[in-house]
Length: 238
Image 1 (cartoon, rainbow, N blue to C red):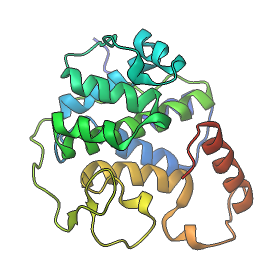
Image 2 (tube, rainbow, N blue to C red):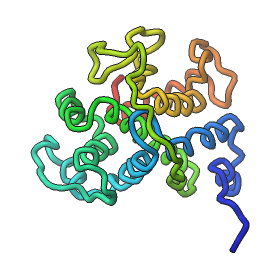
Image 3 (cartoon, rainbow, N blue to C red):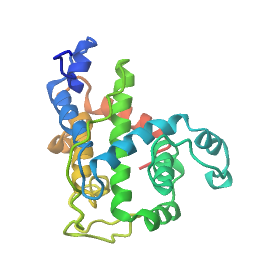
């Protein structure tokens, strides 16, 4: 039996010949494994299965046919699920993963009626983190990071203090201290921490977001051009 341990995500990048910034590799090594542990509403195994279904949705025949239809609701059928997640969760994961631009309040409310607002919000966060990690790997030409190992423990299971109805699709922090996008997943603080932790290192860098001049490889205008073009191509008009 080999004594060699599984390399960290950042080490995988380095072995492929990429010397990515230390802050970025550290964020990946910290937040990706955390998704294998319990969150606020879901246990570690459920979160792992959401990652698996997020990736599986990219090759789902039902999702493909729905993407070609005027409305996804016009195409009935069953998803090509590879996990034993509840069918409502599978449908939500697949829809959020590959057809996010056509989500609606009606869809979100129906999904939350099935699983509850907490699990729905946490699921969205896990899907978002998975896409960030996978697209970064694709850009480098390396394999997607392996599904995080399961960590034992139970979800918190408590409504976060200071959250409620703010008129959005899901409950959020009642007090807005920054942009709405920073509190969108606040009903699942642990997952939101992973998501915001990754976003901060890839893009906003905390307080630097308020600065017009960034001392990075790309200037602030260049970064915003990439961000705006990427959003437009994905039909995200936030």
